[in-house]
Image (tube, rainbow, N blue to C red; front, side, top):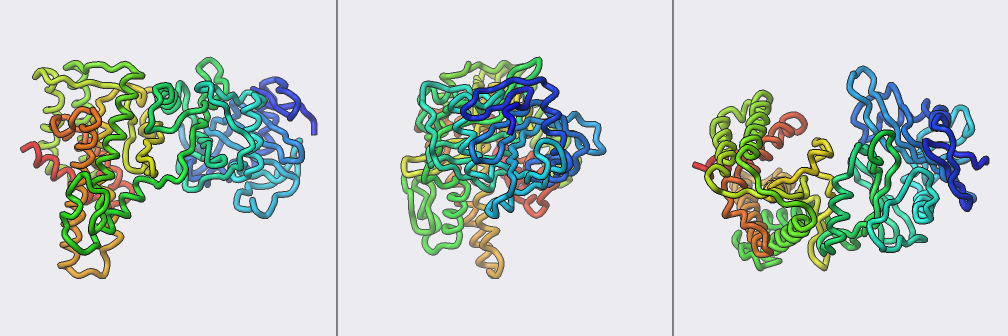
Length: 503
């Protein structure tokens, strides 16, 4: 095969270095693949639309390896059929083989009808350990064309590790290398600096023990702007259990278990009859406080002014007004919720300081990993529905705390839903009470742990915490009404509890 490459970029053929060709070659390379790419892309869970009407390459890099299929890494703008919305940027990693191995059958996309790869099988390269190993070697050797690895420090990037793709990702793809590295590939890269790359780079420099170490960020050039971050390479946390799955398991054991419902009430207890979790919730609060402390040292920390808080309160009220239109069950709480938001908006005028800094931005139990060494906080992308530039703005740390507190509520209700069924009325009532008590005790334990590690005590900031929890619950109610109506009672119960707290 010719060593000429592709790209707004370039191609790499080991051991030959990159060669730059004309920008138009990106279209030439991907053009013959479009007939098979468009139908496949529309079926991906990380694709936002349902159809594809246009696909324009931004950058294309082809990496060749001796005896391996060709690897195409492409960043493309995709237009959905029947919409006037601006194109959305996606990252595609494609393998091109003369014959597709049976083990990769589930990753098949189609057969290239024409062009330089006519007759080749094209498939999702993330599923191919051989190509993911090739990608890591090319990045480490700086032979990946326009795809660049911007190192986060002097840590060497180990190669020769056995790759394995992680399943279950929603908006991104991920590959683990030998239980040492995690390659995270953004399927929908966004313009501008990456909030996650910035946060992890700063946390690595601060030597934060509760977050994975960043090795570097992957980027491609963006005409007329900052490079486009398309992925990260970070430390992999081996032997970890997803915090959400762990919490639900402990909640289920407690709700369904025998013994005293108060058996796990002591925040220092890590196990107890019925599945105590409060000790772990306490430790998680400490871990989050450590992360917030490191972020506060790495980024500017500012005092919010009265106008800032008033603007925040106004945005909360607008979100509430929008939600009430779709969720009429919220109407009875509208006045009380508006008062909660107004109470927060008036804090600065009453001399109550509110500070803002860089935060996680989308904190919940699913963003925490439990290991023998304690908790790790991961995935610093922030709320996916919020533009990247807004996610990087300083926020009060209690927004993160509120997100975690709401997650404990959902974990308890998820465990309860898994247990209800053939139980009689009396047993169902007992389980509901135990679920409510489990969530309450773990919220308290988390807050106690957060304060014990030097964070501001959430229980001493009632107006802030209630406003942020209520704002989150309103968002949840709107989401559940649109996507999972049978879960709507969960955020509605939280709203009822929160407005009662302020009376």
